[in-house]
Length: 365
Ligand code: GLY
Image (tube, rainbow, N blue to C red; front, side, top):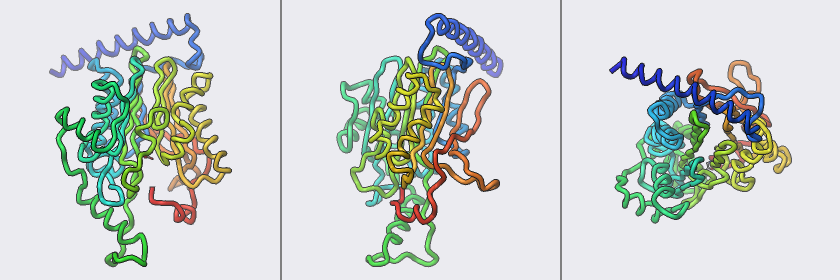
């Protein structure tokens, strides 16, 4: 078993080396406009916005293994996102996520496949642990792109998805604590000592590039915690929460969805890469533009991750964070898995984080 695995691993890597060399030669001949000419080809590659350690490494390893075993980039990205969706410890994605203001989880997800230039999405989907897999079925088994609410649930049931209660005890307690602490002039009394509201880490994007240069992406989220029922964010909107162009690259966004939708953030990142920017430059361009639109004082954050066809990648955010040890401004984390293995990296912030006072003026996103 071990030998067979090692052997197939070795075959996989020789195949990768062969394909990568072949692709590099092809791209030199065709003079690809879409990748930085000087960048060495780095394929396969998987990039994610997520950095919560308990889940990020296993999910990227699983995506890598899926590619090793001959799966498509979409199979790899879906596999990775499913791991986050079913993990009850992640309060921002799938099962165990923080609910809307009525204590109900309404999930948004999308997928986009580079080779077929096809996409699928679901919004406000209740009771299904793996919304990104339903989004994939919308793409593969319907002529539509997006299903929402009860229609999405009926479609999921038709395909055999099991309805489950997604609200874990921890998320329920987090919701009750939020409800009891919103106002001092309502009928709810928080117990003493008051509970600190639960933090959520954010939406997940996974972008995958295989040895042939094909790519795909998947995004999944609970949206904003304690949102108004029926609210739809950027994650299921193709061009905002996710965009893939197999000739150029892929991008995904997390953070304040409304801003990402207004600027068509992921589409814009990919278009900037088409014009010749690296993924890093394109992510910074979009985040800077969002910051400028808000006169340099955006009261929210948006984070963009991207990769291109030759396997360069990057990340930027509108707002950064302060490193706890050095007390210096730092970008937000993201993670990659390539031939060098798994690693967590930090992107580029356009602005410092919001002050605690500014935070106090925004809803609990
Ligand atoms: N980016 C997640 C949301 O706004 O729903």
